[in-house]
Length: 307
Image (cartoon, rainbow, N blue to C red; front, side, top):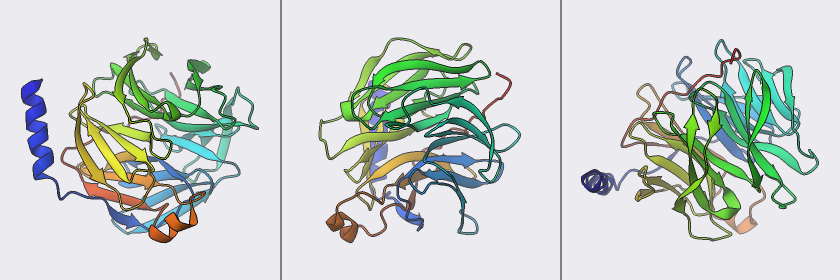
């Protein structure tokens, strides 16, 4: 591991000029949940407060918005087309333009103070999505959805975030944003169950800068957006930080690899409910940014409705 860590540190140094650049002036209120479609060669992402699903075609520089009737926290691509999505009211099946086809499961929490937040399709083809407790009483949770229904996996959260899986599918990473730690748990692909947590990364406790969304690259490194700090950080599987990349706005939210070779790293950002002086300094807040990554990402799993 020591030799591997040294190589990565040298790589980070030679790539010091890598930086995120504006690729889509989307000005989302709260951009989140970027997902690359290999079949279409486009990036989908949500604006939670828009609320909308957004389709960005990098080859054409074209953005399309599919408006939603309620806040939408996360999406996953479905085998055969369309989306599975976590909205305030629950888990929904949507068509290719974001129109509702069926409600799959109710949000089991009080929707007056709870909505679905960060989530993604797991390596097993099931959908994993967590909630945010807007009352800040630690009542939110992380759930698994499959053909058997909605199953609670982790309790006692305030804001479920940072969900990602190791390349071999044996480890699940997770964040409860206000706690400012990244945890790792064993993951069983056959059953979709998780083991006890262990703290992998301690983020300095700063109310103005907290861990948000994440993804994993093909080398197993964990990339984490630090909301409020204008940076994205890269960590080895053992939790060692090996890179920090500036984002030209204050609040990056979540990451996804895309492009034909999966070497373009996209990051969504927040553009509402921020101080006026911040918006004056960073007028592109809420837009989509990207950089050339030092390593490729992983193909996005598709939700399997038969599981």
